[in-house]
Length: 419
Image 1 (cartoon, helix red, strand yellow):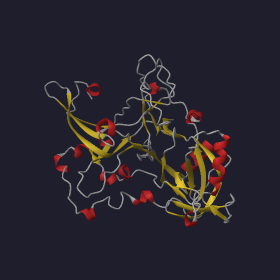
Image 2 (cartoon, one colour):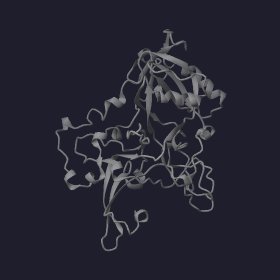
Image 3 (cartoon, helix red, strand yellow):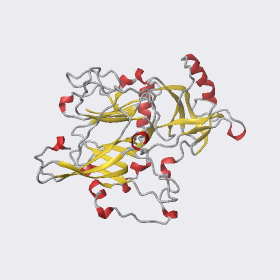
Image 4 (cartoon, one colour):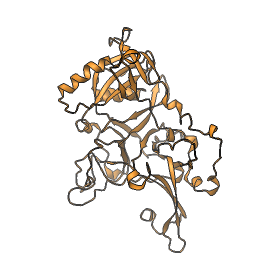
């Protein structure tokens, strides 16, 4: 904070938020003179400066005996579109981020906290006045130029796009036997995977036979993406029209009523940052008058029946369409993201995503081999080992709405760069 604002600042109070994340996404075009990074991710520090009014958070509530368990912390970065000539602001692209597990670092499941810095009238130096643990934080950034989103989704299709015939909640029971959209002849939901997945593993010589599977669910009322597109382009177009990716968490085989069922991860967003009404400005969080919390009866405490049931709603309904994909080596598709604008133009590039290989640990990821630290200006972002959530505007029928999906594919990226 002292480096940022120096000793000649006349601002008496500064606020900041810090979060511990898993990795930093590397920049595809480092600044001139910087060593070229040959890894997709590294250790490091990512810094973004915004107005105080652009940061809102929720303090970690006191844990009362018999109360609900602490909700998982998450950080939301909202990149707001450029203002139009009429003064209206464009629709935002939002990235939610699951934070790193820091139990073995500081005893906390995750680390997210707000800070208040005050200026000493005598020395003009800023000192840390107070900190407060947060369970959620939302940060809004408004670039000075228009920006373009680009996704990298290292997935490969397994089987064909088929119609959902029967499902309940996050359990898929039956799909159409034919890929013909008007066909209603049924097969158990897992039939296609049970046949095609072993064949894929054999053809690609996958030794440990551990392959993660995702299902792309497309609403029957949304215009379908172009089937002739390459897989990457098809997925991007589908998500841009409201499609959602869900990891297949269990199913297949079985007998009796459970035969052929598939269970899909129902989560499409993170409840903490999605509940914007519960977030307040940082100055309010540090205000002693805001510390008081109503001691509600246990039966009225929010969270006993889940934080937000709308985030865990019906995954697919009869008539929707579904197609399965497996994850592939992210290095083969990582170059799909476009090259960034020159770092000297002052425009920020936002990069978020998943760590490519959570089991691969290197203590020298941030180094170039000579002990130097690489500095990349005008680039901000973070990677998670758990998941990110991506919300984007969807234009359909002359109206604009929002569509969210959780992305937990190793090596996936969401890049928002200046146009």
